[in-house]
Length: 173
Image (tube, rainbow, N blue to C red):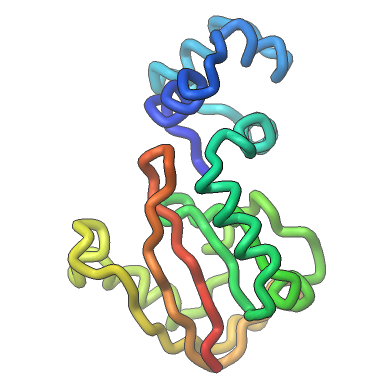
């Protein structure tokens, strides 16, 4: 998940944490956390992952959603709708991948068909919540690490407690 300044501040406040405490846990200065929240500075990928671990249990609803995805017997995964960062994946989905992808940016593995569907989302009203789900035809991506084959997936938009949206991706065939 990409932590924008506003989302980071919201999560920090919801957890009753001071900037200095977050800074101590992430081994940065309080001024660095302040700059992140102001949008002046963006946390590095390693810092983003550390923030994800820090706030992983911040929402009961989000934690429950993550558990449901991870324990599903379906081939399903959850990404941040904005950044395409992997938030959770079922065991059958993880078994398809050569490495642990948690926190990875998944769009780089998208096939041409998925990229096209992604580019059409704005016109379909996805971001204005006029569309809550969409069936997408996929094609092969040629990746050995995160292989995608020709088939169909269901994209479902799911609100997260920090105000962002998640996208649940379920393989249909």
